[in-house]
Every structure is written in C-alpha cells, then in structure tokens.
Length: 181
Image 1 (spheres, rainbow, N blue to C red):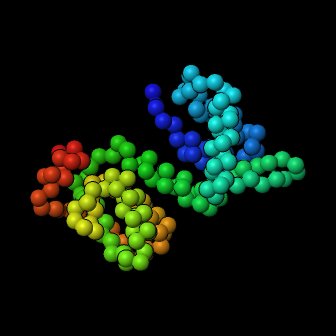
Image 2: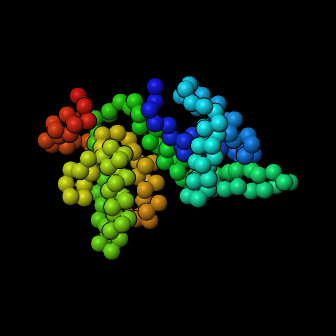
Image 3: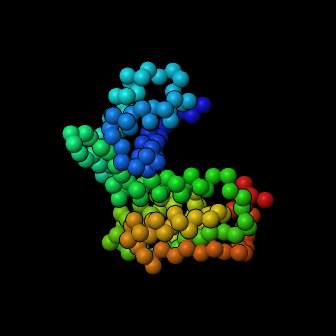
C-alpha cells in the first residue's frame, strides 16, 4: 500500500493522456486512477482535496483553465509539460540494470547565481547522485535526458558537463553505496 500519493503527478499525467479535458471530466478520471490506493477514503473528501490540488497547480502555472462555449476546460501549460517530462524521466530510472559505466556531472557556476547552483545541487542529489568531489557528482545509470532538462530549466548551458566514465579507480565505496556488483 502506498503511503503518499503524488496528486500533482497523477493530475498532470491524466491531462497529458487525455489532452484538453473538461473540468467535470477530470475528477472522475483522476478518481478512477486513484481508486486502488484509496480504499478507506471518503469520496467527498477526495473531491475537495482534488479541487484544492488543481487550484494549486493553476497557481504554480502547471495547468490552465480556458472557457469555451460556457464550459471550463483544463490543459497543461508549457511549464506543466516540462514538469511532466521530469516525472517521466525520473520514473524511467527505476529497475534499470547497471551497465558498468558511471555518469558524472561537473559544474562551474558563478557565485552570483548561488540560488540556481543550490537548485542544481538539490535536484541532482534528489535524483540519486552522490558528491564525488566539490563540484563533481556521480551516478551509475543513464540520465542524460535529466541533465539536459536541468541545463535548459536552469539556463546553465555549457557550465554543466555530463560525462560517461567507463573506468573509475577506487570505486568500491561507490559500488557499495549504490548496491552494485
């Protein structure tokens, strides 16, 4: 049983699958997806919660509401599409076999962009990278799409470098940390 449900992800994926969706149709579709996880939840609480989450996604700029012929339609914004892409990339990394190569990210970011640098550091850490040296982070699985997304989102371009390393000396601790053979 899942203890935490990512409503944001479910709403965005439902919209991506259905395209533009009437608001009245969104709730039943999302509720259908959530049914297996919500055996003991009351429906009226769930609908309210879903409405609150939808409003939050609108405020975050991930979805938008358009009115056409007196009906409200909900769709993804460009930012919502990017967030969905992020979800899809992070989902892909699960249950992947290690190919024996290390992925390294090296970055050189100026002090005047400290907030963006901290965001970058947090994102790669949350993705699963560990720090090898000061601005060198390492990860055992394919993640080029994730790094490209970060480069674009943070406008870093060539200040972030992605490398695939075939041989890394003294990698026993890394193998142990990532539970690799």
